[in-house]
Length: 204
Image 1: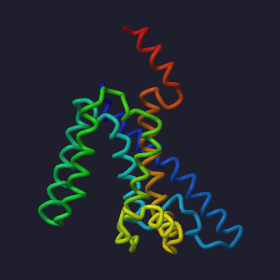
Image 2 (image 1 turned 135 degrees about the vertical axis):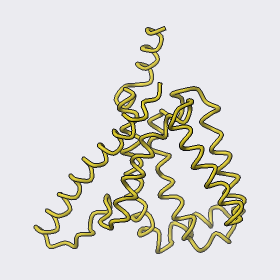
Image 3 (image 1 turned 180 degrees about the vertical axis):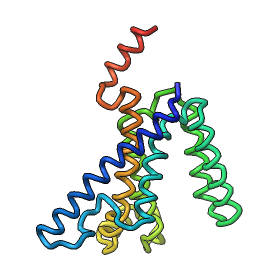
């Protein structure tokens, strides 16, 4: 059963706690050691960045329930439709639109509390906030996939890589925390998969 209200509140609450602790740490270390206030890459001090992180935490707190008919599913598929239509009609980014459409089909092909409720997915999915900035900003994609080792070597040596990853880390953590709050409320985060399966068999 989807718990729409509990999950969006859970995502916001979890990220709020993280943000407050991280902000206090940032200010304290900056004052004590004389560091600039932007030394901590785990949070943004930009108002729009802060707002974006809270929105991301909320959305990722809802995301896992897209695999079942729910308010979360209706919301996300509406957003994905608008985004996909924009990629096709406005930006003419057909490859990205096709990949987004392919990804959008995956949750409804799985069982409820399948891969969308996996701890592995919790870690992997927010990494889009690390990968997409690299995809957008890295200038040497023209190398082509036929020379993948050369492309990877060039990417590792790219001077802009550390700053790009640093910029995405803030949003990655927001997504991770929101996702973790969902799994925690569902009783999955700190329970092994075997324990979950045993509980499911017991309840049958």
